Image (cartoon, rainbow, N blue to C red; front, side, top):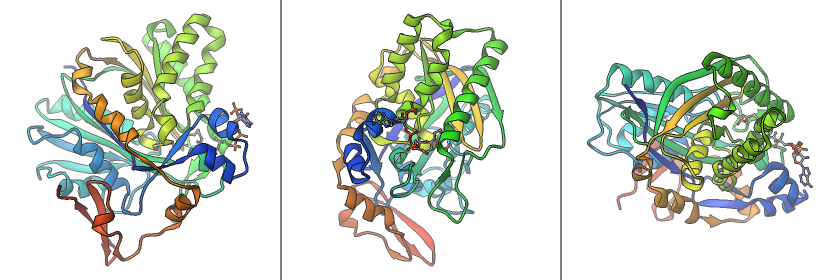
Length: 384
Ligand code: HMG
């Protein structure tokens, strides 16, 4: 049975900062941020937004009443509760039926890939049902930290089913786990801790090791792929991994892989790190901005600090254009407003407490955190 991604939706907040303005405010050469790191804009979530509201926004774009959803998994490392899962809040917001399994999954940026692999197993056992897998995160390192330029926010929702119309999983996958201290966020902290350069090194080492294993296990080489998609914490990062192949392959092949890589990071450059969603935003970006072929076999590298990595192949389905609303997705990026660095700093330093979070008239989105009452988060859907 063919199983994979049937529909895919993307959401990012409606405000952003300009990376050149951020560089100037931090007294850094803008080229470092735009070329050395490779970012141009960074999404700024508003006070009424979190992993729940962004997950709802992304999923709302792709689900309908007729989908026989039996499983909802949210991959996130920006959880709002130590006990209740983001997925559980979504049942009300998205009018999901009660006869579903719903839970949250965490392993840094690997969470969504873990969710997709579980969803694949679920659909294999329940072919008439679909699974909703959502990656939703806010990447926060702190004002004036080295990681600040790699912050971002957003969500990617994917509906997994049999006979998928966008991407079929090929069952060719290799994975590995090592206990590494490259990046972590203790429960007491709202911002992540990172050993930045070490994390880059581990990311590349994981890719190299998994690529060797993949070639070995499946008797394939770089000639089997025109496109490799990467987890994109910032757009220069995947390129560092891709460059490890440069000396081993024909220069034309490296150029074509690099060209496809650039189209896959076009959208990530505009929003920043989505953590769990970044690899899947790269997929969307390649499908919209690249030149994907029908039945093209692509390789996906998922990496979550801590660390878990997975390299797997999948095949682009010929009907993908009819099932991917490119115009709607492009609008998500286009219909945003730039805010100043000081406005961003004020929003960043806000800490929602008990009480009303925002006036309903100030809400720019469909789903929002309306109130915190007795420390319980109460969400609302805008009725329009
Ligand atoms: P940094 O120390 O500020 O930057 O931190 P740098 O000094 O390493 O410079 C960055 C690049 O800019 C370098 O290029 C410089 O040469 C270049 P590279 O050597 O990397 O090719 N540069 C310039 N280029 C043009 N003009 C200039 C100029 N000046 C310098 N004038 C770092 C950078 C990414 C480490 C930092 O932002 C950070 O710590 N970020 C957070 C951690 C991170 O994103 N790690 C990525 C791998 S781990 C991962 O992907 C998992 C993650 O998503 C978390 C999860 O799984 O949940 C993070």
